[in-house]
Image 1 (cartoon, rainbow, N blue to C red):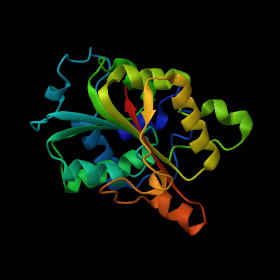
Image 2: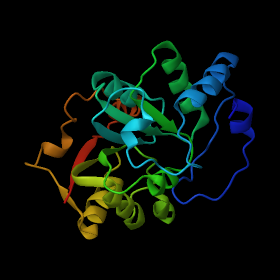
Image 3: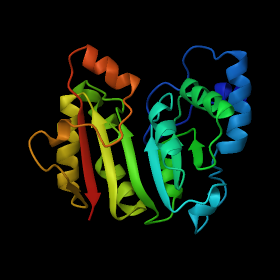
Image 4: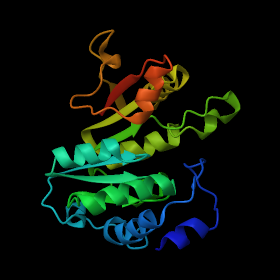
Length: 236
């Protein structure tokens, strides 16, 4: 798929993605990086998922993690670089974010990384059951207006998808600076029943994850006086 294809791809109904797919026109160098990078790193969901997902990666990996909505890729790149024995899959439908990621990978390739540039629900439905060790959903679009809450990625349907693809003991991590979305996620996971919240004390959910590199969204939230929350749920 070329950058032109990505830009001109017709809009189609999705179940889990409602945001913009395009921002400012990407620079020519980014367009080249996007085209070559997607050839190298993009997962092909038209083929049946292999029974052993470890074979998707050039690296020898022993665990699998998924990040949904990686933005510019700062967190995903950090995690994939520090954990070369873990295979990472990153999802980002926003073309500009994917172009930034592919530009970074052009300079410092990673053998333990794959990406998908469309609705994450399609990838979740493609993955075999019980294959992931972790799912990260970090600073997702909060859809703050109540009439739009149904668009939030955390939903009963998507938690069902998470429960299917996560191994027993696998972790779902959710970070946000929007109180209503944090409460929404706590209630949704409680009601679903497949996830157990891992808070150990009252301050635990305000402590960043171990090795947390920070993100530009988090920095903006802190500058604007919003306190981030970091939730961890274990698949029962």
